[in-house]
Image 1 (cartoon, rainbow, N blue to C red):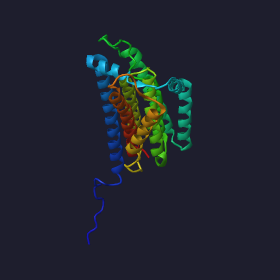
Image 2: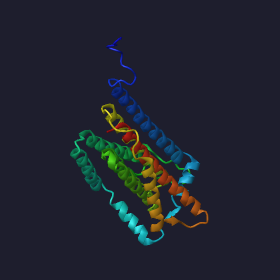
Image 3: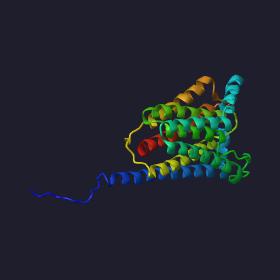
Image 4: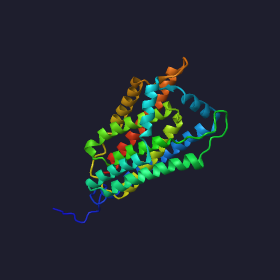
Length: 286
């Protein structure tokens, strides 16, 4: 009987697996961050620098109507809840939950995600991006600051949430993100591209933070976590609730189709971003 000792570690060895998992998880997170940045840049370029992009964005900005003064007032009050103080309080709660779980790195990650996404949005909107005069106004509002604030809190909540409750967090977060984006459009504060760009900027930061966390994390969970299904459900519920609330088409026979397209764009982008990040955290973190 021959006994083999000191055999070289194979591809599935316990010594190599954690290191390979960390490398793979980090790479996936970095790729997601890069793709989100490229998508945001592409949307910004089309929406700001091309005639067709400005034209479509301008049309889309006017297709949603609150339906009544009461609904418009409700949406305005909803947006007024988004402030520096309320965001700071919400972030403190999320960081506290992470610390209670003994996850200091997640608490720090949530803070970096929030700060990075919101500072980036403000720098892009006020310092770097301009809207040339192509016949549709020159005031740049891309990316949406309100959407960034809310969605960065949503993804921070996904980041710090325990795996068993993550699907519920994803569902609620996707709904809140969708409703916020729609509210900024109905209120006339932003265009569709502003909202989508804000979602992508936030996702880019969230994935970048996850890449750093994944590089120093030995994952023990499964690749399969609640992600896209609850994200899509949450976005659909929010879009449906907005319609039932009174949000609908403005004047013009063509508007119903345009309304459906705008609703699909905001809800779809929110669901995709939330679901993708939920999948990423389930794949890379404990």
